[in-house]
Image 1 (cartoon, rainbow, N blue to C red):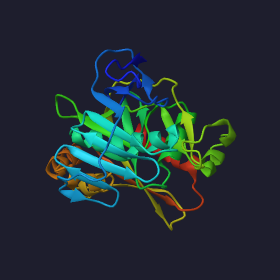
Image 2: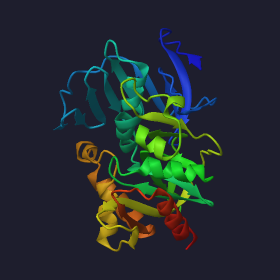
Image 3: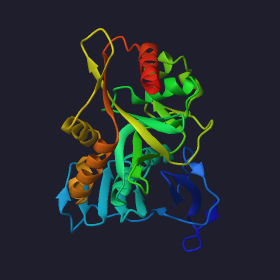
Length: 309
């Protein structure tokens, strides 16, 4: 932690996440602390406009212009994300730190990662051996629940909800670890035999809880071995199906984090190239399970068999 000499009212907290060194006006307990002097991203309080006068795209709660994205969350904050390097928070009166953090670490950071040219998936990821596997899918499909179940069996969680995929010097995809925390609804915690009352809410009025998973967490990118697309069906059994050809690309495109930002940020062409490269380099497996019951233990066992194969 250091004092911002240019604005002594604001204290600056040093963190790291998504392979970035971050100087933030707001403490981010989920992120790892950093003692380095390099700064890739600055987060500060300041004035954000009610709308972008130069906007080329206006969504429901966001507007975008070249190098700018304005995220509007009623009664919480306006977030101005600039050039992949800065997030300005115009905080609403009465908003709690948890309110502000929730949207900062989600949509605002998602926009920043896209501005930096990174491929961000709506996914969780775990370490398997020296590599990584990714569980992608829509909200509520059980990505965090599945990652937590693997964590309980000794696997290291690399990221939850927002998964950054980069490419190494040889063009091979790697998962960039985010930060060691999972977010779980109360029913998922009970399914996993975890006590919700022992965990903090991620937002005061929300029943979703934060589960720290710092054991064995490392920030080194890991080679991506396999993508799993989680799905539900009316079938009574679990089925794993390898996707081929354009189906792989379409799955990656469908589960890109905040995909609606891409056109607004003029990143559709880059995203098409990245998604195509990932589809060509990595197996994509559709995992279909019954809607009820979840069959969590059976699903973990099936996936462990698939890892081994």
